[in-house]
Length: 102
Image (tube, rainbow, N blue to C red; front, top):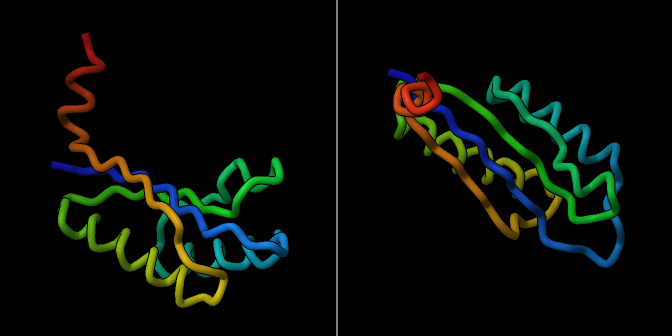
């Protein structure tokens, strides 16, 4: 049985706009360290707050949950800024596919 998680981590707003290269470099570091799918949140490119969207799949629900915590900590430890909000979807792949078959 597999679980999937999609999380959006948004950084606190800052008076000085963040450098897109810094955010891209953070994304690369997260990809390399956690071997997960990470993208820069859309709003950032539209002048909004900086954020990252993370997606991962794992058979252990608790591991996924812990992974998201570790990623949030890594973001804060990176010096890029504090995480202001975290929106997470954590679902069982099986129940998800059953609902969408038919």
